[in-house]
Length: 571
Image (cartoon, rainbow, N blue to C red; front, top):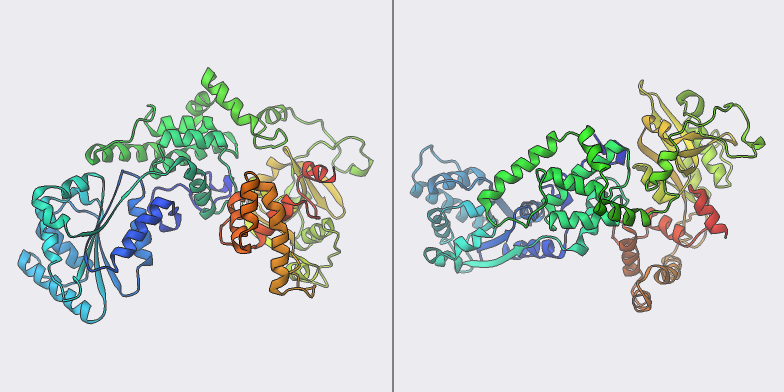
């Protein structure tokens, strides 16, 4: 579907509880901390509650993947069981053999024997029950009795209950007061805050393989209003908005995309306040999940997209005001104007004799692509280096010798624009043949190809059918990474980074006070601050992506993909 179009390796907004996609907001960190703390306590119950779609199940999956090696997890996903059925399910999860039709006493005895055996072996058993608000009072009382088995130091079974807010009401019943008193840790997981939404979107896009912001500020504002900060609704609406943008050939998600997607996700109705009961929620969200799979993109989407009313006009004007009119993604007027077919030109005419810009040609796979070696030769030439493939079979080793390095990535057009470096695109035709092009400049719908010292201007969208997202750029190594320089010690790294972070603090800080605060940080913390500002992976390590962005911000030497940026640097 839209994955190749945007440059994703996988869907970024799936509602499956994949732990890799868990965005650790402050609330999710606290919920995970309660779980990790609880299993190191003295047994008993841990209770995690939260509204539908706030991420309880995803937190639990992350917890399961990070428990200590001596912990065994039994996970119950369907709690609508009788006491005997639940005990049988626990035996199944703990791999305890038991006869079919065993009585409650027999099952409890088998579980107790297994817990004692595990304790003697230094292991700890944890029972996790999802959707625990569906447990009956009788079943909860049976669970409490399971925790009665204990040694002088600790109880032998830890039970984690995950559920909607109704679980707290259930535990507050007088007949369950004994169980309620055995809860050693409890936490209520709220929805995301407005200020956390950009980071949430950026994180999920990054895990899916795209290091770029494709949601406009207006879209983020509309998305929070439509979802009320609930992660599951954010995912459903965002996924639908990506599909709508793909249908229009747009690489930026606008407020209009979110508005239409929210209406479809909500069944044509405006979003309402978050519901408070589990029984009415479940059918609703199952219907939402079904609707997003069967939604029709065609005529209905386009009709909705181009409706003009007072609210649309105001919001769209706000979004467009934030977009550089030279940006081919955001400039709608320029895109419409380019629909007029260019005047025919002679493909063999040399660009050196032109007095006016050469109109874009349609890309020819055979006529405009090259071998990998020839493409690298042209890329090195743009950096002022002479590359001879016969003498240096591996271009990336040669790059290190010349103070450069290769960065191979997969993405979309937006990824190229963010890096802002000439790039080699790997292309494939229908027969699977691989060829390469070196793109020197990219502006509007036109891309300039470097070809053996000459150039060709072609329409970028005529290349896209052959490009599946793989590209390589060269980037300038800082002195502490440059093997050709005798200054690769840690002091050189600290000096290089610190001096640049001082400049970047003045450039990106929100006022003098924050700038001074950043300048007083340790270097690693300064790098982390800068990475957050640029939407990069926040690890405190100045790797390729971070260094490239530093060089971009500080106008370091080197060719740029955007001619507009080159002109700006020369001013």
